[in-house]
Length: 332
Picture 1 (tube, one colour):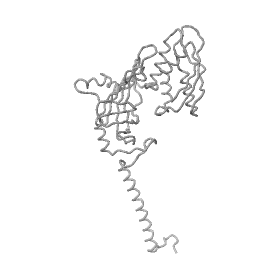
Picture 2 (cartoon, rainbow, N blue to C red):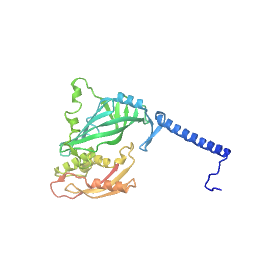
Picture 3 (cartoon, one colour):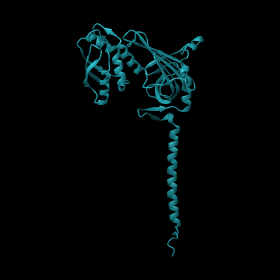
Picture 4 (cartoon, rainbow, N blue to C red):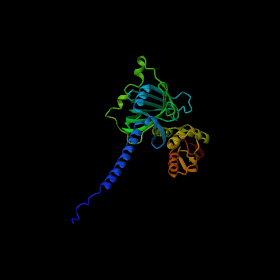
């Protein structure tokens, strides 16, 4: 007897195995059909974006229709006499029907010395509608590819991170365009007005090879903080009361602190608080800074905010004088 010779299978056994394999194949086929159907029907399902919320996805035709509907020239500018009159901003956005965008945002900051500092952000990229947000018929979240961006201030020009992905949450229906809480209006491009939409030569800066990469983090928040603190050191006064210090904090440093505590910037209700105390020396520097109370148990954030407050500068006095003790509570 040859022990290596396979034992003949009975017909009933072979038939049973065939049935098992047949059932297995049918199950696998049904699974792939279900997955394929779900992938092709995103318009009727919800999708998870960045782990934040469920959104109703658009199909390809809906995406193209939205690009065409919202294409055009849009402008937003801060109103005179607004809550924060020391910062004025004009944001101009051109949206093309293929999703390409060009954007120029210009800021002007009123400094403590009564001078004005300017900052410009030029960017180009591609925006594609992704899904409805469920917050209204025209509320949309978009995938954005930032291809190139350039920062320009009074002293320097450099380009920031390129080919990066982000998202825009907008409200748009072809007649209105709202982004980051700012309501944009259509720009009248009739006649020569079209040629004045973007300042002459600014878009060309994006493609200049002579512009170097920014050596450190660069955006308006960083520019605003550095400009205020460096300018403050040029101001010399005879006296500086506690009320005057509090007013400077209200005008400039509350904005800077809120920016640093960016984790709170999208909260509609200011429910988190931080109470700090510190001294302001006659040289305009902060000393003995400490956090008295913080509603969050986040030691890293607390340390960062303490460092932020400790870096503040104030007008310098003409002569030596006792420090002013300041206690202040901030809400985010």
